[in-house]
Image 1 (spheres, rainbow, N blue to C red):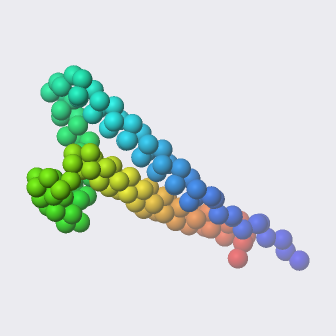
Image 2 (cartoon, helix red, strand yellow; image 1 turned 60 degrees about the vertical axis):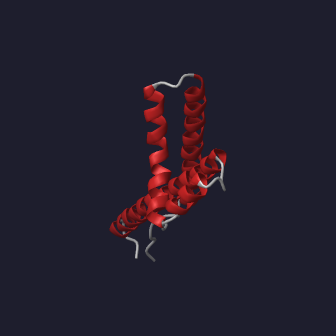
Length: 126
């Protein structure tokens, strides 16, 4: 009777993806809060540009989903405060980062599975 090598087991990929996404979101949040605090204390041109750069990711995502214009109208009409806009931008950024982590992790996981399965078959598996 022929003994085949054991089939490759799935890595805890989802846990790794969620951990990476959480870490990136936390880093982005800390950087954003730090820039906003520094901007209030030392309003330099560099910090203003850095703040705009950090806001471009959620603004573009909101624009693509069609939610930026209603948010802009609500802000200019006084129905939402600057803090409210910051919260919306923060939540949007976290969602974008998690979605990117999920897509990239899924692609990498699929590639890893394909490569492991190919190696398993070359080693004599079915």
